[in-house]
Amino acid sequence: MNIFDIIGPVMVGPSSSHTAGAVKIGCAARKLLGEPVKDAEIYLYGSFLATGSGHGTQFALVAGLLGMKPDDARIPKSFDYAKKAGMTFSFAQAKLRRAHPNSVQLKLTGVSGKKLDFVGESVGGSLINISSIGPLKVNFSGEKPTFIIRHKDKPGFISSVTGLLAENDFNIATMNLYRRSRGGEAVMIVECDQEIPDIIADELKNLFGAENITFYSLKDDFDEEGEK
Image 1 (tube, helix red, strand yellow):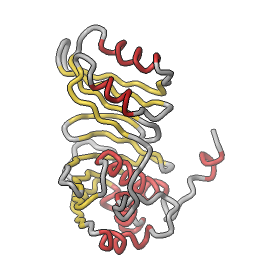
Image 2: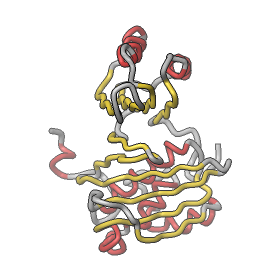
Image 3: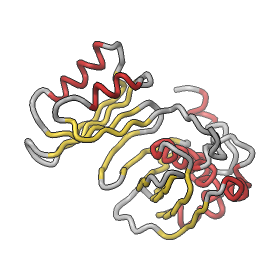
Image 4: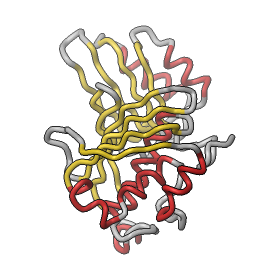
């Protein structure tokens, strides 16, 4: 336990779940998109929908999509900054089933036209969980560099991934495995203690059996107004 577990996160806003957590969800979605957001369809669920207006959840989500952090003094004026950055956004009720009560679905379009459909959960104390990316069900915190591998369920694939990381001195923090059926589609989610450089990412993509890899980096190479 550290001191922030006791006194709470450094933040702007009244609620670690509805404000700080919402900022972090928006920021995580922006990182997964990999470029500035041009348009955001924001679908609120549960208490995010019922009480979010009083906690500034809408401002917080837009702030995160702009790349702001939970302690950014500009959060209450994020709508103005979005307009300045040329980012459009809308809010509606989410049609999620059995989701966490502090959930939001984000349908994003980036400046290049890239799309992302994302569901994030604010689980308390500003901590978040990313629960889906498109049709893929996932489960990771957004606190560490992460990669999500869709692959065929076959003997040796997991060891080839962990072996490649070990050979290059990368430490695995957490790993979750899912599969639809034996020998069918499978998903591997790995959170690492270090950023994965491009050369290792390329080797992972070339592993036999790997079908699609999504990388989530803590680095952000564009600012909140979409400028390199």
